[in-house]
Each structure stands twice: as structure tokens, then as C-alpha cells.
Amino acid sequence: MSDFPAVDAMDQPWYEPPLFTGDAEAALPLLAYDGGQTGAVTVRAGAAAAETCRPRDNCNDAFALWSDAATGICFLAVADGVGRSEAAGRAARAAARVAVTAFRAQWLPAPGLSGDHLADRVRETVADVAVTLDSLSRRRAGGGHEHGEYRTTLVVAALPTRIPPGGGVAAVVARVGDSTAWRLRPGFLAPVFPGRAEDLTPTAALPGNYAALQIQVLDLGDGEVLALTTDGLARDGRDEQVRAFLGRLWATPPTPLEFLGSLAVRRNDRSDDRAAAVAWLGHHEAGPDGTFGSGTG
Image (cartoon, rainbow, N blue to C red; front, side, top):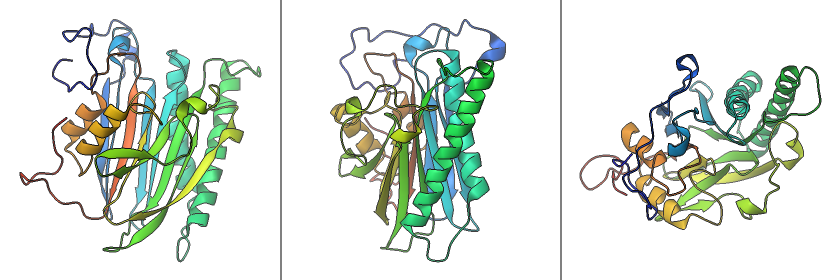
């Protein structure tokens, strides 16, 4: 992966991961991307498998997106399976998928959309995810009560897409576990949730830990950036170098290839999958060369 930018001092800069050696029928993309425009919001989302996991495993991080132009809403979900097992990856993919399905099914727009209204919908969405994952886990265990390796963290965001020029909107982010949310400040990512990721209970994951749900209502202005990431990409209170790298690259919407490059940035640990969903609200100026995104690390 020497063509991707590196943010750590690499002990083996020549390292290339062996090709996938598992069942071809089970192979999932090791780089995944989605994105586009909805209202005044530009979205980029993707996932990348860790280098050391590529010979045999699929990516255990996942994302899902949904928007409704008629009611002016966008919903983002990012999940991180706990551990390297196949069950963890299935839990992450199920959590992201169920979160979007649940939010979409219960979305009822309200006149003068408020942060409290959005927060209620998001809280109910995560509750639906917790119940559904619990059911899926018990089904896998033959009706038992232990969730085993079928566990995942989850972070979601709901944000209006009708951004008045120079104005702002109320958005809601929520998480269970150490996947997290960021606001872009000049040159770096600033955490949305208080505290540090390492202060969280290591077992704060779904199913089984809905009580660990954290919710924040944010006032986001025209030109702001909201990012959801798994801890393999960036962690609260740590990874300052990575957060500065992403802060520069995500200042304006990068191209899809640039965005995937930011997820696949080379880390010396090489052992953690990464996923992110990023929303740019309102108008963003083009770079000095006339393109969007810096393309630099």
C-alpha cells in the first residue's frame, strides 16, 4: 500500500498485504465508497480494511446512508464490529443497515424541525437497532442469552439538508461505544462528545449496551463539516497527527478517490479497519487549483 499517504513512522514502509486467501464467495470489497449531494449537503462515506487483516478477513467496519429530498433530511450511520471475528463484521453491517431502515421507517417531518424532534427520532432509531441486533444474536446462538462475538459500536447522525445561506440548522449525533463524531475546525478535527475514547467501558457495544447511548444536539452553520468515524481512523484525545491530516484533506469535499485515500492512510499498527461518513453543509470554496479537496497529506 505504498501509494497511500503515511502519517506514522513506518517500521516496514515496503509492506504490501498479501492477497485475499479466504473463500471467494465470502469476499467483500476491501475498499468501499458511496457519496453524493442531497439538498445543500455533500456526503462522502467509505470503509477500508486494515492491511494486516487483508490476507484472510473482510472489513469489519461498515456504513450506510439515506436522504429524503422531499422533507430535507439526511441520515448517516457508521459501525465498528468489536474484534476480528466474522460475527463482529456481520454485526457492524447489520447495525448500519438497520439504523438506516429504522430511521427511514419512522421519519415524520415536523414544521419548524427542532433538535428535540430529531433527537427523539434518533433515540428511537438506536433503540430499534439494539432490539434487532439482540434478536439476530439470539437467533444465531439458538435462543441463548450470550451475544458472544456478535457485537458492534455504532455512531449515527441526522441533519437537515436545507441550509440557508449564512444560516444554520440543528443536527443530532448519537453513539454507543467508541466510534465517534467530529466537527472540523481550522486544520484539525474536534470531538463532538466529551471525554476520551479510552475512558469508555470497553464493552460499550450493541447488542446489550443501549444504556450507554450518548446523544448530542448540535447547531451547525453554513460551511461546517460533520464527520463520523470508527476508532481505527481517529480516536478522541489521541491521534493528533491523523486528525490534523484529515482536517486538511476534508476542509472541502475531496474527490471519491481522495476520500478513499484518506481512509486508507497508512498507520504503523496496520491492524484496525476504518470507516467514515462525512457531511459538508452548505457552500464550500474550491481549492487554489480550482478543484475541490486538497489532495495532499
